[in-house]
Image (cartoon, rainbow, N blue to C red; front, side):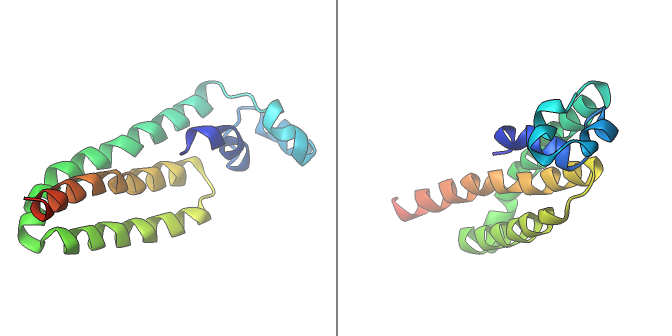
Amino acid sequence: AFAPLLTVVRVDLGLCDNDAEVQLLPESERVSACVCKSACKSTIGSANIAAVSFDVLTRFLLGSVIEKFGPKMTDCMLLSFGALVVSLSAAIQSGSQLIAARFFVSCLGSTFVVNQFWNSIMFS
């Protein structure tokens, strides 16, 4: 979950509106000193929107993908792509990279569609 880490992430990525002053403080005081106003909130809001948008798109597309490749292969493809994106997200260093990472990680929310289809086949 991203929300509990939001205060730390915005300091680490330099999203705080007073980032120059925050970076001069000791590590233990940075999170409480961060001021998140217009630019910071805009980036965080865009990241939150991106976190939902690709999920919605993949949920629409998964029906035909499951029919073509089957639920096992679709789940493997989806989880493999998600593992790659999650591992690359460790290299995030800016707000735009955060938005891109949250956009692509959001496809993992669609795995429930595959599992719902797969379970209905197994127990019917």
